[in-house]
Every structure is written in C-alpha cells, then in structure tokens.
Length: 469
Image (tube, rainbow, N blue to C red; front, side):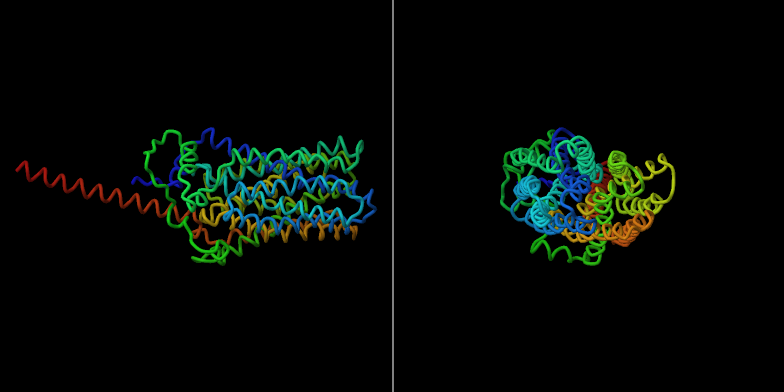
C-alpha cells in the first residue's frame, strides 16, 4: 500500500485557495478575539468613571479576564489534542463572545470581573489552537509568516474597538462596546465547516477519508491512489501524555525558557493594551488623541507581523524574534521621554511593531518548536503560563499609575519585560525544534537516496564496461 507523508505534502505544497481560506477563518476569529481583548483598555476610563473605581481596582478588573485566559490557554490547548481543534475552537469562541456581552449588563466591579474571567477562558484558548492549525497547514517556506499573520487580527481588532469606542462610548456608554462581542457567535458554524481538523487527531482515529479531503485541498495536483495510507514522521507521532512530552527528549530547559519569554512578552502586550490610552492621557493628550495613539500602535503591530514573518522565513525565526523584542525594550524606554508629537507617534508605531507585532512570531516559533501531536498542548501551555505576565501587567502598571510617577518610569517598567523576553528566547536550544529536527532528518534521507542512486549508477556503469569488453 502506498504511503503519503502528510507533513511532506504540507511542506512542499504551493500556497493556494485552501491556505488562504484557513488563514481567512483563523484570522477572523483572532480579529474578534483582539477586539474583545482591547475592549477593556479602550473602555477603562469610562468604566472607572461610571463604576467609581480607582486605577488599582480597574487593573484588578482587567486582570480577571487574564486569569481566565491563563487557564483557558492551557486547558483548551491540551483539550484540542484530545477532542479535536475545531471543537475546542468552537468552545472558546462561544465563551468569549457570550460572556463578554453579558459583562455589559453589569453595574458593579465583582460581577464584571466574574463574567470577564469566564470570557477569558475562551479568549486565551483560541490562539494556541489556531496557531497549531495554521502551522500544520502552512507550506514550509511560509511557516513563520502565515501563523504570525494571525496576530494581525489582534491589531485589526484593536483598531476596530478604538474606532467603535470613539463613536459609541460617549453616545451610548461603555456597555454598547461590550454588547457588540455577541456578533462573534455566528463564526461557530463557519469554524465547524471550514477550519481543517488536526492531522494527528484524524490519524489516531483512522479517518482516512477526511485526511484525503484535506490533503487533496492542500495540494490539488497530488494524484492519490484508491488505497493509500497516510502517515506522519516518527517525531510527529509522539506517544503518551502530551503535557509530559513537553519535557522529554531534552526539551525541558527550552520549554521553561519559552514560558519565561511568553510571560515577559505578554507582560508588554497587556500592559500596553490596557494602559496605553490612560498613559497618553497622563502625558496631557485628550481622550480622542489618546485613542489615536492606540490606532497607531495597532497599525505598527500589523507592520511588525508582516515584516517579522517575512524575515523569519528567510533568516532564523528565533533570532528575528529575539532582536525585535530587544528593539521593543529600547523603544519603550524612549517613548516616555519628553519629545514632540511626531516623534512620539513614530516611537509608538515602532513599539507596536516590535512588542505586539512580534508576539505573532512567538506563537509561530512555539508552533514550530513542538511536534504535531503535542503542538496545541505546547503552544497552549506557553500561552497559558505566559498569562502570568498578562495578569500582573495591568495590576503593576495600574499601581505605578496610582503613585503618580513620572511617565518615563511607567514605560521603563514595561521595557524591562522586553529585555527579559529577548534573553529568554536567545538561550533556547533551537536544535531541539521539531522543524529543525525534521529538516536535518530530511537532509540525511535525501543524502542516503543520492548515495544509493550513485551506487546503482556505478554498478550499471561497471556492467556496461564489462559487456563492452
């Protein structure tokens, strides 16, 4: 029976309508996720005023969703490797859309925090699942760019919520922004129909027919026999408990370093997502101008994703990620210094590109580091543990804001996280990466094939010489 290596098919496939469709649906889910994520930051000044809470309490309210995201990323990420990625993704979308809308009905901090916690379970769970799905489907030459592009959805969602906030906050109150989150429920049927299921999940259930349909869409030119066996490379068919396997085969130290990188990176993302508008207001800008900084910040994030993803597919994703996080630390340290409006807008653009935009590369790198069968678990655990940084960021920066410190000290605190993230990534043993291992194995296999062919050619040539004599 003929065997088809599904990873090899994915590696060698040309980008086509199948990949574009997967990118579209995954990015759309991330867009509404990003809209929801940035909602609290944009509405926070109005929430603080109406509910009568100070900055420290507001930080705790924002962190309730982040606690849920920490648990959701770890649980839904691991669950996706057990029940399938489409089911886990649908659960996540339902949780964050329904419970965010319900949070708009609350009138006191505790109820708001509880509902945002439940919404956070879904918010945290979707990104690891989508990253694993996009990484599995992407052609090799675009394996960093396409998963990283998903984070454009976060940035676009942030732009949308800033634009909606400008129109709705004054006219209809902060609650109206939260009610719009319910629109995301319409995505669930689309996910179940159009987002492809995990290959290892289908292989474990001998669902050859569904695998055949995915493979044929992934590479339409491939001619499959009636009887064909689909397989994955040995390193992608990891046996045992997914969580335990994150620490096997020498991956333990690198897994922990990846977690530290996610903690520090998400500290930057959520500190800025929650407090950038308020920090710009402290700098003396009106609410409208402060929201404009949020838009510029998210435009920078989109540019960072595209440039960073392009570079990562041509250089080394690990070092591109480390350098961009180092740039984030430098630019954050500078943005709080006295300067003109044009210079500050330019720096905020750079911060968006290197802090938030770069984080899409972090997910892409994590997706490539782990084998297919534990990919959702690996990305989910990194994202889940990383939420510790996301949880404490609004609280710490909220505390600093309440102390009325100089603006530059608030930004220096965020910059320090960028330095930690860059160093953590730099010390990961990249030779343990699933992508690197697969490339080395493939090169060795190709070398053996070439050697065998050369040997056979030598035998044929020898026989030819004897015949001529």
